[in-house]
Length: 426
Image 1 (cartoon, rainbow, N blue to C red):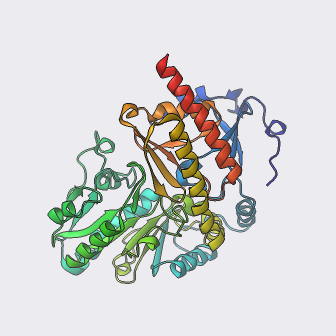
Image 2: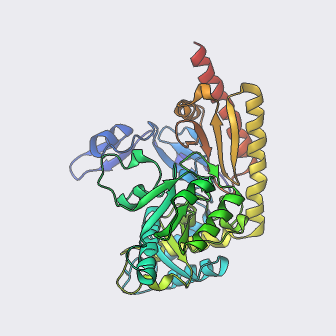
Image 3: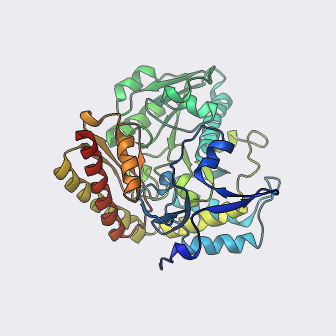
């Protein structure tokens, strides 16, 4: 892909027509007009191509963040741009009163490629999880009665920001101040089957987990643990729900992470990479449970939007190919190699973990709570990356990031680490 000179397109700051005056759009405007639930970086990106991004001052960055594991094919992938433009000239929105061709094609491809028989479309991972949790309770209500309503998830898990999903999520900080929360939800220890055994009962309607906990620190579930959870669910007639919002659509080197473990869930949620940057979410489920979401039980005005589904179909077509999925694992090896080199040089990583292009590096105890310092220094060096809590640096780049961009980005990370260590000594 040819990288055009961003200076040809953008000046130091954008202008916005307010209807009365023309104002410069800068980061300061965020503090003036936006609710303060976010604290975005001071630089304002204006253009991206591939795994590179440029800000208002034409500074260039390598993107290891991927929009938090969303931009699975990088920025402005030409095939995604083309299909979006083509669909934009045909049909934008209908609502769920009608169906549409892109949604039907995408649903067919998802069911053909996975365990699932049925699909529900929505707009985000949180909405997909909301649908999954409602389905789990409704299925148990329909088949076992109202007493079978308890949901078990895992500490440090993350399932979204709605009141229901933050309640199922295992991080109390996201629920604080929003109580009372939905009831009949408990949390076991991740990768600890005995912890789950102590909680599960015939009142349990579902066990919910991420195959790899993303926001909780990039913690992969062991194969033995995942298989044990499946067995316990079967023993207690509970549904197994896999939240693959972050791990899905090639992120771990498989189309979905459950495929690596051989453990088949009853319900799976997907979003993030599914749209390659265009908002879409989906809940996939088996024919056994799908009837419980009968006519009128759940809905989404924008769910199954033709624009989103057309883009997601192309994303799926591109990623669900052996050469792309195998390439994810090959790029993982480069990341791990370069991170180990940095650790030999600086000695600040306790562990490198994850799979595919969802990678976490836990800092040694001396640097616990300070992952954000490395994030800030990396930005100054021209590298965009993530954290997963205060102790873990996280990488979730494009699945087709060029190898040379990985190595260049790692050189920038090395400069950032040196900067942080030098500041600490000073």
